[in-house]
Amino acid sequence: MEEKKMNETMLALLGFATIILIIILLLKNVTVPSLAFIGVSTVTAAILVATKTFTVKEMGDFIKSGVSGVHSTAALFIFSVLFFGIMTDAGMFDKIINALMKRVGHNVVGVAMMTCIIAMIGHLDGGGASTFLITIPAMLPVYKRLKMRPTTLLLICVTAMGVMNLLPWGGPTMRTATVLEIAPNELWKQILPMQAVGIVIALVTAFTWGMIEKKRGAGSSSETVEDMDVATKEETADNELARPGLFVFNTILTLVVIICLVILPVPSYYIFMIGCAVALFVNYPGAKLQNKIIKSHSGPALMMASTILAAGVFLGVLEDSEIMTHMANVLASFIPQSMGRFLPLIIGVLSVPLTLMFCTDSYFFGLLPVLISIGNKFGVNPAHTAIAMVVCRNCATFISPVVPATFLGVGLAGVEIKDHIKACFFWIWGVSIVCLISGLIFGVIKF
Image 1 (tube, rainbow, N blue to C red):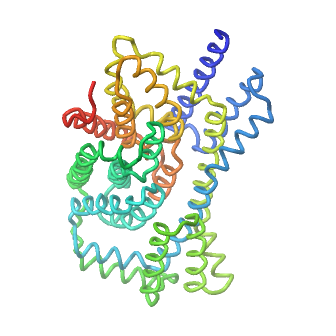
Image 2 (tube, one colour):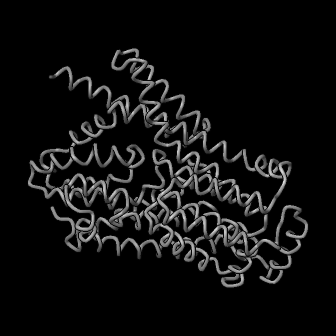
Image 3 (tube, helix red, strand yellow):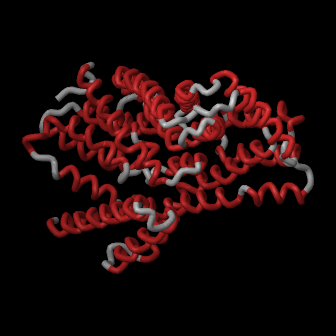
């Protein structure tokens, strides 16, 4: 028994070392994310085989399982990038941007607030990928026009998404309810006051960062909205790929694709496949022109798809080998007996850093049950521990390098993952702590 515990501890330490090394490589810009995930995960797998913890075949099965879990996200990214690339080439976004600019002008704060509202509405379906696909392609050109940073766009998006992800049909809430063996709606009713505070914080985030961008000089161009309109028309006229006569068709097609993403029970990547096929056939008939369009967008799509697939290797090695479960047990063992009754507060404060290490399933199905069992020894209500974990963790979901949708967001925004984490981490951590405090004030969490 003692030997088994020692082996589990060693596996946990190996897991921590793996994750920390990957994060360091990403933040230090030593290599591209795909190479970091593949290289470090392969070394970890080799250690597991060399120590006879697992066989080569078992590691191969783990990797296969991990990649199969993210291949749909990779396919989604490839075809979504192609679809929105076609719409950009055809000039659809130019007219939409012009309309937005006429409404908000150089109002940087207004653009930031609009971003937050669009992200909240887009995340009503609980899907991170679809929200990024709805929000970023629409708002990124506006940010560029006003000289606002794309990292700010992502920060506003992930804050709004983290709050809306608490809805009862959201993945984390359903997972938590499953562990607690209650209905998701019942859990949601308890955390509703904290979500309401989170929505206010998300709007405050948009306003605050809009003001920060304004002070940096964003939107201060002497160019008028009319000048922008003329410039856009000139750019469209010079663009041989522009299809101004098909604006209505392209807009309707884009809306249909987005609606289908929300309501149809079919894979998201298939919807974009169909959208790409229709968009290419109508806008750019002929194999030669279609081939040119596809090649022009293949670089970004391939780069991010390879990163997502490489992250699947990492998840397969650590999750299917149960290393993440052992990591959860080790972390739980560090909680002092005297601090047991403060468990919800402790885990709430630490949730954001832990989100960078644990994927969604390992966090809720690995770490949460362990902490609930520990809390039971000190008379802690399991629901209070679970609520602290789900609310505070949700804030940081889409800045985590172990969440595939994060790579979709940074890829669409053209931002490096390290820059995204640097720009968002401490702000998001602060947001999570404010939500935790609101839970204590409203009596949702007690200790």
